[in-house]
Amino acid sequence: MAAVAVLVAGAVLYALLSLVNHWCFRTFGLDLGLYTHALYDYAHLRAADCAFFLDRSRNLLSDHFDLYLVLISPLVYLGGSWTLLIVQLLAVMAGAAGVYCLVACSARQPWLPVAAMVSFLAFFGVWHAVAFDYHSNVVAAMLVPWLMVALHKRRYGWFAAGVVLVCVAKESMPLWMLFVLMALAVEYRHDKIALRWLAAAALFCLTYLLIVTLWLMPALCPDPSPGFWRYAYMGDGFGAIGRWVVLHPIEALRRLVVDPSGQKVEFYVCLLLSGGALCFLRPQWLLPLVPLVAQKMLSADEAFWGIGYQYNVECAVVVVPAAFITIANMKHHRLQRALALLLPLLVLATTVYTCHHPRTWVRTENVRVFSAAHYRCDTFDRRQALQTINAVPEGASVSAASCLTPRLALRRQVYCHPAGRQADYTLLVEEGAVVLRRQSPNVAP
Image (cartoon, rainbow, N blue to C red; front, side, top):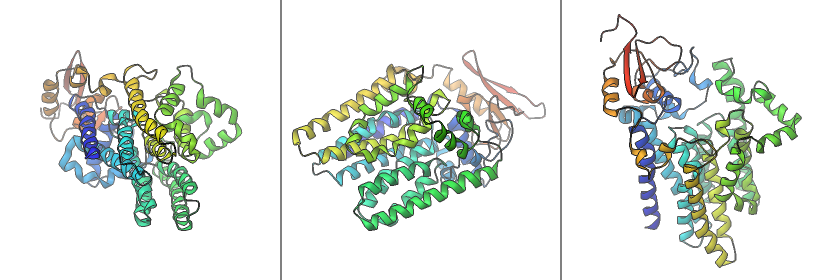
């Protein structure tokens, strides 16, 4: 009953976090508008492209090789612009249940899995990810506790299916999964059957990674991905980046920690307080953090460095279970109880800090569900905005301000202003109101 109560409370809080943001027009073109438009295209059996935010067309899979949007696209007929947010919300609840089951495999005390689930739902990486639109890596990360449970229970078919589903979410996920599988190989080093399955899974991840990044994505668009500018100082492409790290190890280590804003150190402190410190007692679980930290800290984009957005969600499915499995295996019962009580409080306190006074910039009205400002649309009048959006003819092309595009994404041609595309209508936010302008005289009002 305690686990169910925690899950219900978590569902309510995360619904207030995510769905209220969308209701108040605090979701954006990048990324909810873009991905909802992709759902619409895929549901109509069309290839999605990047014209939504770029001045020229290129296949969206060349930006991020995300097959989840293809798989779940029929749901857009049921959920409309809310579809991806609902999918992400349900995935987080499933991930919390997976953490509960995973810790329960090692814990004799029934309260330890409940404490783990509380910590997971309170983890800053999960909270900030759900507060910012939709991302398929969030959904994929929630599968990882379940594939670990399947491996523990020797349900290898389910384990293999889980690995495949994680990999197809995004081109970076198979690289991360390789490090997760290495950690699991240490855990199951005495189980020959499990090691064979882990080796096969690692071979699949490596093969999929190379095919997608070296062949499929370049074939879809020979130009570098728009996201590659973040690592341009290291070279052009994955091979050049790898060579730079090998040839400049001291500089790479410096960049992992040093930045003038202090955001990187802030992230490390928050991660340690949220259970990361206990991972040093089971150091194999530091391995999955390696590609996550490298992707964040070696980027030239400051938005990657800190505690915000969706860049920390994978840490939760590694750090929280590892911390509580470590606690479950402790022989000293008083220390075990103390840590099981203290860790959820530390995780919660850390997340509260990241929502109020972090060094990293965060959109506070998006993350503070206990603030009245979270439930207000202060940028413009919400009803007037909806009326203006509904005034756009169904078949017309439209270029709109970022915060308006998720509501306009279910149409053939929609662009995030300014995308460099000529559209029939333009919707902008001016002086506290949404303004509609007709650009083409040949379009009926």
